[in-house]
Image (tube, rainbow, N blue to C red; front, side, top):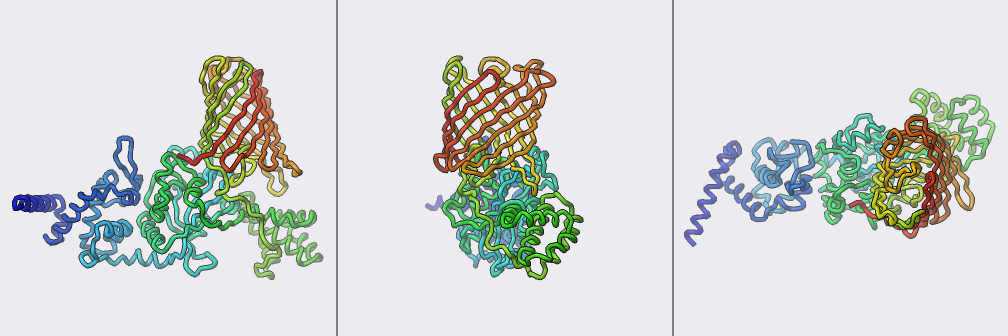
Length: 640
């Protein structure tokens, strides 16, 4: 027993000596008694291996790399206390324990910089406040008191095809200030890519390669909305998180720690939705979102996983949805008056309206004002035109003091929670001229024209990473029927008020059956783009007819000269009634250079929605002399 005690004393002495060597500055600032306390805390950390705690790993955003070593996803050295803290959870935890003995300005102490880490450390090691009094963190407490958060909601801004950065929507948190019913003092917390004003094709390309950092920020709610130039034209869904005060306090403490900390941003993986998952795990540990999505995640996935079974969300309709709803309550003459007012013919039109019914006049003025706003936020008119055309309308509406003559609001669409999941797997039986074939399919995201549109963009296709692997019995051959990088299609029924064209982009590997080669021996890389018009007919069966001019190019050894480029026409009909959707398409492409053999192709397909996350599809297609028919079953799953 005496020998064992002697060994323990020698061990403690050795640790004390090592500490004096490794931490001379801190050791000079604290007494030997305090240094022994520090060593005791370190020994407790070693005994429990506290650095392996899930909560500690979440707070520092550690992830296992290929060789099993942890590395933090944060790229900011100021996010760590230890020099090598970004690659060592243990060193960072030991540095945090040393921070309890900080003897400088409390405002810049480690505990004031990282309040949630130290709350957890004090709880984990049962550290008494009497021995280690918490520092007075004036800046943090003033910031927290200014927010005075009463509740927290997860906001989902619906996706739009107007800009690549918003294809799949955006998510952030809304911090509602206590007693502020108008919401003007609310704050927004979330991540966004630091891409300046770049939002087009190059944004998607660069963000896919991780060229932008993502930064966490807490800023006024209206300012956050202003970061999205098209936010007025997107539905906003607000889902209450139902946090108690302890959860809200944890959120605010960790938000303080994250201020300005950069993380790598990747369009499909470490996007704004992915960055929010660790934060939601901290305030609601039972969610375990970070474990559920290890490969990629879309904003829709985060919302569904975090809010399954939650209370009904609040909904703010897009500006265009509001304009369209008001337009539906106007006569044809009143609609024409709205167009004249919003397009700059105010004096004559306002004089004409004076002689009419005051209520109908107000309805016209209100719709015209909203429509003018939509034109401005859509980038169709500049600020000078907006201000010059809007001033007479606002003056005419001023006597109403903001009262609307329209009762109610636009019909509420299905929320993202009601839509199918993002990943689609499929299996099919195909009938070919030479006999049967069997097919397996996978698509990372998100929807095509025959998928149920509830909770997603209507009349649109937004597909990324779709694959069709086929086994053909006649040739005993397994080959890739299709591997599409991306397919985006927007069918917008022509409307004199919006004047939106329909368009399509596609890129990927496909089998060019029109070349006459054997199945699986005609693979080419194809890229195409098209633009045109669509018209809608609403009857017992809703119909959307469309036609496009299409440019097409292909590259591969299956083609003469190994490439081709040309243009042609594509036309189709999308029909729907209840759970059934049908699509007919045909296209003809004439190639002017390279392989000049023309392409004549088409398809006829019908899809039946079986439930929220499964469907069956029957399809017939032809391409040149190659024809096939197939029966497919699809199951939608959450991203892995």
